[in-house]
Every structure is written in structure tokens, then in C-alpha cells.
Image 1 (cartoon, rainbow, N blue to C red):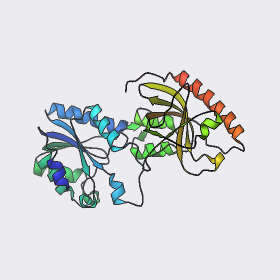
Image 2: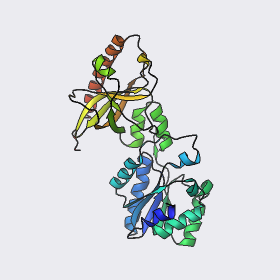
Image 3: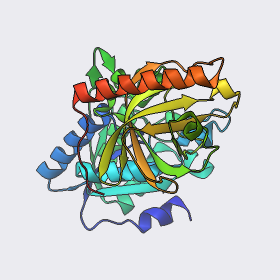
Image 4: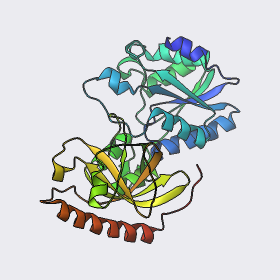
Length: 315
């Protein structure tokens, strides 16, 4: 199915005020732009809309330089809808789409999504080779009958908030900075899978999370986390890494839930990363690892209690 057919299946009931982007992670900079978009759409009596892409354009344009994503498509669409966006148009990004000029792409949005206004972020550019800068898009707007507005960069601590900046902080394990940029804790969601049950042998059973290869992960280490199972939350200690004490090599995300009883295999869980406790270490014996895990858990208990993070949520 080509992009024209995809758009033809999305024709809205009313004219629209749009913005375009991947919106990976839906961070505070995105939220700032989207709130402005929603407000302007209401003022013009238009539907607010987001045009986004799957897969990430980077994976098509630079297939040997894969960009880890902060949130998958389902999570992005859900977040956009929860923010109040009326129309979320997910378009397949292909090599053919990457060859569309800015004018061609804008013409399709004008025709099928009934675009009357376009809001652009501070680094927005559209079309082949990113030819569609703000000046060109404004010129197209005058020719084709739609308005163009730009949003200034959103900064935190003097830095422009971006998905790239968040990926960097995440790789460093700086979860406090990640939270300040996202506006919430970084989360991983997935299904618990069967592993070697080595944590249970050590006296600290862990839930091993299934994550997609493209998912961005915190840097290796042990983290204070909050894990949600259904409508309940539990303080937890989560290890991201390769389990060097046992020389396994593969990367794992495994979490030990404090005060939890029951079987988690096959269940969906959500892990919120609060703060890094320490680097992942190689211990000379399982006994020394067990002693360190006990210290980690006591630190998690104190930290989560001090922050008052536990609450009850519904499914």
C-alpha cells in the first residue's frame, strides 16, 4: 500500500492543524509543541493532528546505523491520544517515501488530511534531503493555502530537550536527568519470560523482561525501580546487563520485586526506573553477589519509601 492509499484511508471529517514528526519518547519538548498545536487548532476550529512514521526514518535512510527507540509505536500513539490529539496518522516510511520532495509530501497532506495549518518544531525539515526547511514550507503555504507556525526550542537546565539528549542520559544511567527531560520516569513494558531461575537459587527470584532489540535501555547497572503488575506496584531492584559473575554475555533486564508472592511468568509488567544504585560488577563467588543484592534491596527500600513513589493503579 502506497502513502496516498494510506492517507486516503484516514480522511478526517473536518479540516486539520497538523504537525509532523516521529515523537519518540513524547518528552517535555514534544508536549510543549503539542499543547500549542491543540490550542491553535481549537482557536481555528480545526482538528489537531499528528503525522508520524513507522518504522523510524533512520532505519530506512541509514540501515547500518540503527537508532534505539525510547518508545514503540503503540506507546507513542497512546500517549498522543491521551494528550488530546484528535487525529494520529501513522504512515509507513519506505525508501519511496524518502524520495518525495517537500512539495509532493505537503500536497498529499493538503489533499487527504485537509490540512489548513502546519506547526513546525525548531529543527523540523521535510522531504527528500530535508529540503523542506521553514522558509520553503512557508512559501508552499502561501501557494497552497495553509498557515505555517514555528515553535521555539524547549529547554531544561539550559539544554534543548530532544530524544537524542535523552538517549545519551539513558546510556549513562542518569535516570534523574532522563526524568527531568521526559517529565516522568523512563519505563520498560513487556512480558516476563522464562530464564535460568538463577535469581531464585540466590534467594532473590527475578522476573526477566522480554524487550525488543531496537528498544533503548539504561546503561548497564543496578537500579532502584518500581514495578507494576496489574493494578499494584512494588518497590524493585532491577539489573540491566550481562551478568558477568556467571560469564553469560547476553544482555538482560531482570527485576526482583520486594514483598511480591506469586508466579510472574507470561504476565505483562511495567518497570519505572527511578535511580541508578551502582555499576554492574563481577563477583568472585555467588555468596558475595548474594550479600551485595541484599544491600541493594535495603537501599531500594529506603529510597522508594523516602520518595513516596508507591501507589495503586488500575489495569
